[in-house]
Image 1 (cartoon, one colour):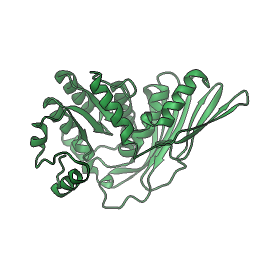
Image 2 (spheres, rainbow, N blue to C red):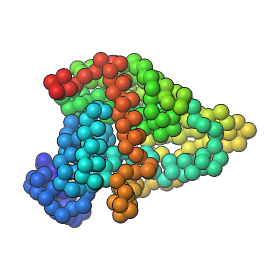
Image 3 (cartoon, rainbow, N blue to C red):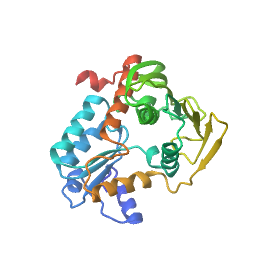
Image 4 (cartoon, one colour):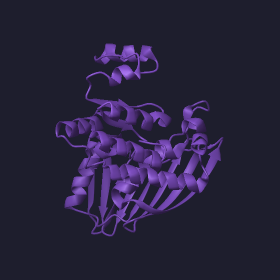
Length: 293
């Protein structure tokens, strides 16, 4: 465990075990097999590249990078050093989401052609880093990436993106995105730091539609409405914070000698950040450090 706040690192290892390191270099020189990066957005790519170069497998908190160009440098490092790199994105690993995937594979609503989803987190304090452009703040990159995942997972990569939003002090407080995807499907997505939302997601196909209820990004219940009148309720309890499911998958990949997740492949991470890039471009949202680069 390495934390810029050594007190937090010491407290963590007292509770859970392991070792606390006074420096990043000390951690990377240790015999650990893998690292989980959960630092501010602006440091994700840099730390991932350092860890990969040190021979560590990397599970990196979303967003894996600030933009698509930065992500490519991370993926290149993973290939160069022959190590597993996976973006930490909880929704696809929840029991309910896996159950829904399996059910629709056996009893589909037809090819999904429309996705509507959003994630709003009102009440972010004014001094939080999400309101700071120097820290890559804003709703799109922090929580909009979740809805981007859902669109990409069901519709493929985006091809055209339209956006309306509200900028505040150099970050997006709210964004509404319409995207046309490679298989012809359409996504309607929103993200917000100062507005609330229903927390429900819709997947629509020619033979029915799916509602993922409550906080769809932490799903425990979904309803499938078929065109023939059938209604199927799916439920699956979750344990922990959800990090346990993605971490278990990540560790299984290491044991199996795989360098990429079949559930959240690099192509997904690439398509997700490309969608966010396009939305930011539509808002004219460029971070100060991107201008200076």
